[in-house]
Amino acid sequence: MLSNQELILAIESSCDDTAAAVLKGRKVLSNCIANQTIHKAYGGVVPELASRAHQSKIIPVVQQALAHANIDKNDLTAIAYTQGPGLLGSLLVGGAFAKSFALSLNLPLIPINHMQGHLLVHFIEEEGIEAPKFPFLGVTVSGGHTQLVLVKNHFNMEVLGTTLDDAIGEAFDKCGKRMGLEYPSGPQIDKLAQKGDPTKFRFPIPNMKGFDVSYSGVKTAFTNFIHKQTQNDGNYISKNLNDLCASLQYTLVQIILKKIEQVTQTQQLNQIVIGGGVAANSELRKQLLTSEKSHQWKVFLPPLKYTTDNAAMIGIAAYYKILNKQFGRLTDPSLSRLNY
Ligand code: KG4
Ligand code: ZN
Image (cartoon, protein in one colour):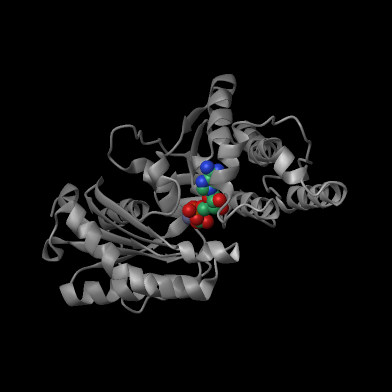
């Protein structure tokens, strides 16, 4: 079969989004996501609830993805799923479904690394998406990861730097929770920050050695600051919400931006490819585009629909696995930790 004729059903269930997509070659025919709202009441993802919700949502989401793509399941040529990293109970639901479906349809099965998927969305064939050339600097910014990755080809990726504690998305979410915002608070902070002053409050930017970053220091500084201020004034947060969001966001973005600058200077990489949920952040996008001019970078920002977890990213990674003839087995385990 010609690779551009492959009809791939892709399933993503690594955290709290149940997602399914159908790709024809590198083109996305459908990209469906069922968000799990149950976690809002707990201020974060509850793993046990996430895996239960995946169980009830996975079949409707797959049916929806096939219907939107106008594809019969018997026309599919491969089934892809997220093997890891992620929450084990969540991964197991998507993995078990994919394996059963592949077995019943007698189709090849393709396990995918979620983090590789976040970077490979830039290879989807679609208006507005331009593929980078190898090698490039991949930057994954999500709720679980913050990594600077040397991408040598589709599946040869070397982590140059990573967070030593919290991920950038986690810092957004935890600081947001401290301000009383709903989970996930990254998108709300982004929105409120538009009306705030990013220079109103200063939070520390850690000076880490090498290419690693740290987000726990700014989170602690922010939490302590809020604690102190609310002791004097119970309405401090609501009175300063926009400025707090803008200043916090500015700091979180500067931390990763400074590392990107450092890596590009020493590694002679000038293509910066961003992936992950925080790639939707408007301040990060704006700062990267400003730096693109001053540093002579070429910055690749994913369309918003491919930033937070989705199954199209798993499908495009599967497309390249098929090209390389790399298939999985029914006995492959789901893995909560998985390196590039
Ligand atoms: O990639 P993703 O969907 O899941 C993981 O693999 O972790 O990323 C989710 C993270 C959450 O922390 C969420 O708050 C953050 O992405 N996020 C944002 C924005 N949109 C999503 N953070 C800041 N600004 C945004 N606009
Ligand atoms: Zn993700």
